Image (cartoon, rainbow, N blue to C red; front, side, top):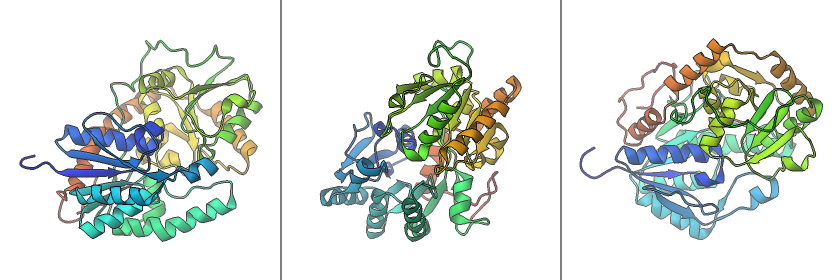
Amino acid sequence: MTGKPLRILTVSHFFEAHGGGIERVAGHLCRRFVDNGIEASWAASDADLQPEGKVHAVPIACLQLMEKRNGLPMPIPRMRGIAELARAVRGSDSVVMHDALYATSILAMVAAKIYRKRTVLVQHIASVPFSSRILRFATALANRLVTRPMLRAADARVFISDTVRHELLGTPARNTYRLLFNGVDHSIFHPSRDSTGDGGSPARGRRVLFVGRYVEKKGLSVIRALATLRPDLEFSLAGAGSIRPSAWGLGNVRDLGIRTPVELADLYRTADFLLLPSVGEGYPLVIQEAMACGLPVICGAPVHLADPDAAVWLRGVNIDLRDALGSARRCADAIDGLALTAAERDAMAAHALAHYDWEKMARSVIALACNSQAVAPTENRQGNVADG
């Protein structure tokens, strides 16, 4: 780049320290923006520690009522926070928003339209089949009244999952879009036979690993039912949230808390399976990290179809949060029936290395942010339509 650097404002609901997948993706992209000569700012709720380094943090004053009451990570900006966000948008050239339903994204879109800034909407998830009928109805209504209009309003649309794209845009797609898979830090997440971790306590049987937030949609009730049903399996859970696995009183469950990326990679390499019985996901980053380490993955359907070319290695299970025991039994069947050969594990890791790249993703988002893609819509390898 020459002349004045492009100013990109990233907007997410929380900063990376909150521990969620969307926040981690936003953090990775912001750092790559800086590496590519972008003047990068990141606006998010002030509930967490701000990112360090060359990314300029814009903490937004927010209320955290919904997460405290029902575990939904939905910060609501205060009046002061709205003003802070509007100033950040005004001072940018382009705005990259992560997921449409968050109040921070909605307000950023409104401000971007007022100040005539180019917008890129990165959509991670679609519907979430909560156990609560009220929450299911509210999510479906919000997607109809908010998500779809936000997608139409964006100058460029990015999906990190083909299943999410299909649900929100249909097939063939009603709007132009780009399918860009999240990246993986391959200097950390890779197969290895020299791991030093223990993957948990001395295993009674096969070692099952869960990585994610301890909230309802991640399927913690299913894991609890499965651990009760199958004492022969050893469960290690890495994460944090409103649910406390350590309080379940199950001897085959270990709550490891939040782990660093290096520690997670070691867990991936020493476990026998990654189990993510979650619902309403796009393409969780932990699945891609596990794949890069050669770890077999069992996840809630249809997440296993998020990357059509990777579906051959992933086992999808129908998860119903209203029937934790039935879902646990289906997960048990998947564990008993899934066996990848060494060659298949190597092929899975090679696929992750070839297709999940933060630098490629960041450069594609930068191109969309400065509108330097092809003038007319084109099709890429996955057959999706690129924004012009």
